[in-house]
Image 1 (spheres, rainbow, N blue to C red):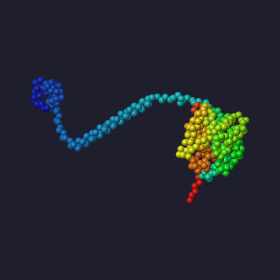
Image 2 (image 1 turned 90 degrees about the horizontal axis):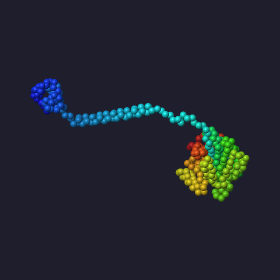
Image 3 (image 1 turned 60 degrees about the vertical axis):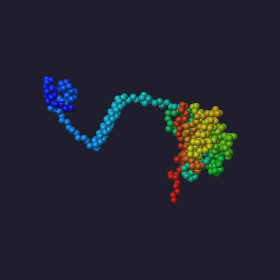
Image 4 (image 1 turned 30 degrees about the vertical axis):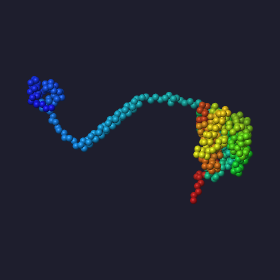
Length: 407
């Protein structure tokens, strides 16, 4: 809206005001106009009115470009502000953490108690197959076995058991040691090939191995104070071609060997034998219930799951049967399979004989000669467990590199 400046000056002068100094409030009151209109009119009266510059309209393409640049600048500004907020929060968090004092728990500085813990170790001896011969060339030089090698491995079994318990484990007070005998101490004559290749007859083997076994048991008694021997028979030393159920135990050369060994050590009060008259034997250590069996009652093992299927299925059936005759157990112990396996509630022993022709021809996995060792704790049952390796460098049969023919 435009005004006649001369008429405005006259009206202001008539009102007793100076047009050159009249402010927007006076002009608005005299002329009856709004304050913002009076401000512009006052500037015109004072000669300070700014000329309006007419801005030419923008090209549509240029206007779109400017709008796009404007949106990008706004986005960058937003990201920058958000990063500043996050950085500030992080700095506040670091400052808050740094301000908190470090409180070390008391148990870290408390001196530990070195009082010994009472436990009972178990060494599991089975599947020694005394008297048998394994020919190194027939198993691609993966193993060899005969009487002299068996003597070295039996010695290592007793020595390494003592070494592991007393040298590698500390802070434990042993009540004694359980030496579980799981059968198949002798290969026997149940197969024609064994009759033809065994280095010792069954009678020769029994008489030969009484001395080394007696010496090893007394060695354990010297190291642990007491030795308890639960014993079951295996399937190889039986005196019949086919397995039988009547008189299964007493018609087995394992049973005869146990009884002769017991008679020889009768005067040593540190040693206690429990020779089972059944295929299974039940005993307890600190309330932990064990069922010792040889393992030949279970069938299968050639599938992709290996021995897991027969062992778990057989254990389930045996637990059910044992429960029904009021002989429940916590852990099942067995040999027979020549594979050391630690399951949740079952321990399968390895073999002192080691890899043989039967294992090779049936494509079973190689396993070094080893036996099972574990600790029974009064509160936690089976805790520490480890293999006892028995192979000896003095056996002197192993080739440095497997023999591969070249053409």
